[in-house]
Image 1 (tube, one colour):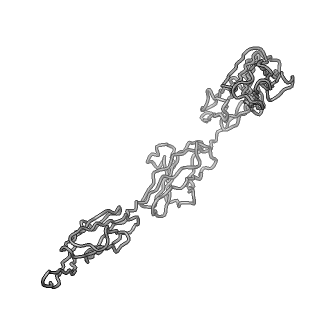
Image 2 (cartoon, rainbow, N blue to C red):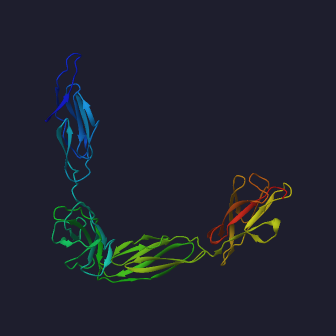
Image 3 (cartoon, rainbow, N blue to C red):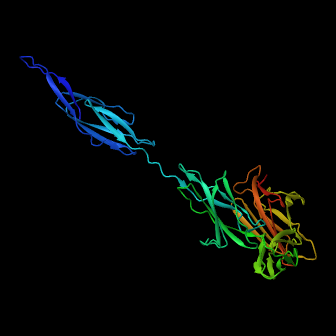
Length: 434
């Protein structure tokens, strides 16, 4: 603790007094060591009445409250700002002539980390032809100051990766590549097997978790013959089957590649067998195709479209028999206006049409939904001019129309307005008398 001397003077009514010596001293600070978050402290000052002293900061990260000349006893409050750097720092302040040193610790740098890499290829049980495939991972993400990163690849015929040199083998020290890292299997893999693999990264000090486990198959020496690779299906759908012929002990799988084809039995097998699958009914007027993969071969399914053409048109009887995209709701009186929808549908084969289901909706002056189901191919509806929203120039109302046609074979096709097959339709509501 340092002492500072000041001078003060006094006067008497009779005899002048000589100079009086002021003693000023700074006490011990409440604290001078701070963490990286900073904080506050105080320094007491002892001084006789009238004796002056000052307190000032000599460092940018230390601020002193009430800097400037003070007199008599007092307390100096100071604040240390947070330290966002990675280096410790020291500063000073001068209180009543005494230099006070403040120290502050740096921000603690978190330790470096390595995340798990991501297994990329081969994956998903795909079949490979090489007996020594190349395994590829996306590089492990890292934080902080990591060293040189290398990878360990593990391959096993068991998903648990047992510690058994006959079942699991490894490759260490594979240098990290740019974005991805590749490792070539260093031994021949047996044919026709399912293999599991994973990888992890290390810099010699930090080791990441293992990646996700991926799988691949080595090519089998087995050969397979299918009863057909092309199947035709009716529009109404149904069940089909393909026979797989192979030698004893040869395994195979069957998968569908189309949403309308579902395998019902024989998704996998060993030796010869049969794959059964269902083809869903089509609602399309055109042919569609899909595929299955059976024993590594592609089977194409071609399904006929529904033998129906379905469409409709809008007629405004008040303006003539021609098809239009707009029906005008108008009248010189309060007589309702009729709008007519006519089906243009027809069968494409020996089938016949047995049902027309109409749905019409629009908003004038409120939401309206109209329905008609039966054998009538046409649908007429009426509305009044002059309702809320109508104008002299005609208030435009969007008309939503749906038509579903069913034939004698149970096939159904639905079309809607404002689609590639049908135009956008409208109503136009006028005030009456226009």
